[in-house]
Every structure is written in structure tokens, then in C-alpha cells.
Amino acid sequence: TLDNLEDGYRNLLLEKAKIKDPWELISKPGLLLNPVSPNKKLRIFIGAIFGFFIGCILKFILDRRENYIYSSLGVTNILNIPIDINLKLLKIDDWGETISLLINNIKIKNNDSIFIYNLGSLHKTDIYLKIKDSFDKKSNNKKIVFTSNLLEVKNFENFILLIKLGNIKNYDLYEFKNKLSLINKQVKFLILI
Image 1 (cartoon, rainbow, N blue to C red):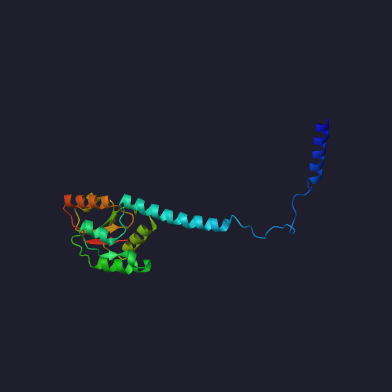
Image 2 (cartoon, rainbow, N blue to C red):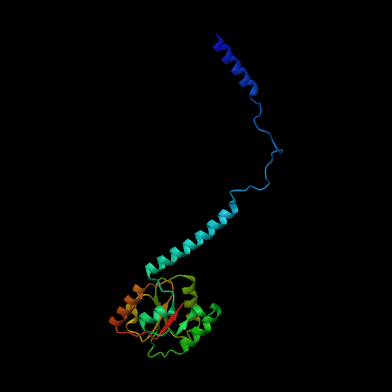
């Protein structure tokens, strides 16, 4: 029983020693007006920048893998044909005058036509229609035929090649060069877009 009394006395001392609030507030608590973290706008901005750069790098790698040609030098190196007109360097409004000068330099014999061969997938695009319209307006009663069939060109003298940079692959140019040598034809003028 003495042990029970001593245990009870110790428990009573422990209860008295307990502090109801074991902490003291130094100042009144409050919230900051602007949150410290996460800064959503900064994260979105950084994510957009990284996404843009990663997208550019991936596009560059995929284009290299696909072998698209983006420079006039690539075309001249493969075809060994000098570029007569690079429409990419001109304003669209100046295309008509340039095409008119080109057509005036073409000599037509025996009701021959001017054949414009489209290499690549340019058909029914705005650029293609603009060029076709410019040729039709400036033709001076010369018959102009747009085609993507190389066999149609075989029997005619005046042969213009139309290429859109970034829309043609190395393979397509080499294949065209081989077909051209098979039909024993020379390109009179090369136009780049």
C-alpha cells in the first residue's frame, strides 16, 4: 500500500507539472499576400521555353533524318543545274514581272508549248496557284502546260522545272535526275520557291 501511495503521489506531481499550453506565441499568426511557392506563372513560362527548344531540336533531327532540302545549294549540287529564278528571294508582288521576263526569253518553235514540271507536292496550294496565275497572265499567247508527268515533257523543247524548297527530299531529286537522263531531256530553266 505504501507503494501505491508513492505511485499516486508521483502521478499527482506529474499532473501538476504539466503545462496546459506547452508553447508561447511570440506574435499573432498571419498569411502572406503572395504565396512563396509554387510560382505557377514562372513554371508555365519555363515549361514553354523548354518545350519550344525541345520541339525545335526534334524537328531539326527529324528533317535531317528525312533528308528534306532547304537550300538552293542542295538542289544545284544534286541536279547540276544553275538556278534561274529563286522566287523565295522576291516579294510575291514581283513574281509576275520576273515570270514575264523569263517567258520572253523562251524561244517557241512550231507551235511548241512551255512545259512546267512540278517536282514535289505543290499542286493546288496557294503558291502553286499564284505561280500558275502569273504564268497564264504573262504568257503572251504562248501555250503553257503545267504537269507532274515527266513523259509529257519528252516531246517538247521548252521545259521549266519548278521546285519548292523544304518540300522536296534528296531521294526525289536523285530519282528525277535519273528519269531525266532516261528520256534524254535538259531543263531549260529552274525555278525555286
